[in-house]
Length: 193
Image (cartoon, rainbow, N blue to C red; front, side, top):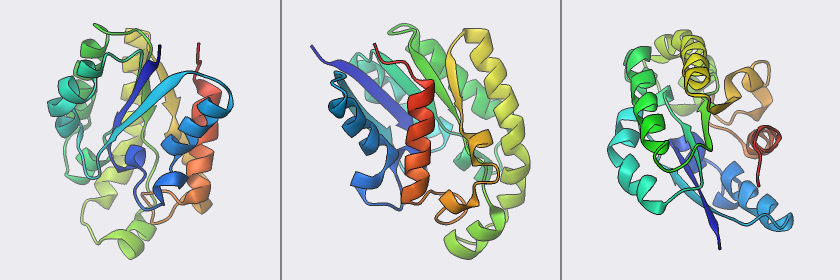
């Protein structure tokens, strides 16, 4: 019998900007197959999603699939929309609470930093990059506290991306090498049983 592992998120989970086969979630699928680990990986990342969008589709896209493991990562798009950090944390907390009815095997991804100069030049011009950049470290601290309160795992992609400019495609999304770095960090912090 397959175990369902649902990954909920935005473009960073979806794999925006790289060939689908080069996204970290696809690499994860291949890693599990190659190692004889029996999970059905379902990528529920949607480009542009805020945590409000994720919360609105959470029951249908995650809970209804009877997950054994759940990964949730979001918040960058919220900050790019000038939303407050506490609203992101509240949304993720609601997703954690709903997840706990299905499984205790929950991992929260701490969103990576952005490189605002590259994002302005290579992605799209925006007036909110400064706000996002300033608030991602605050989001990191609040999410770690939330995970500790609920005794769920987290993966700190924010710290992973500090001084790792070479893994970015456009200051927000990741190139092929970045997806490999994400996969390595994910595997090192995740227990498959």
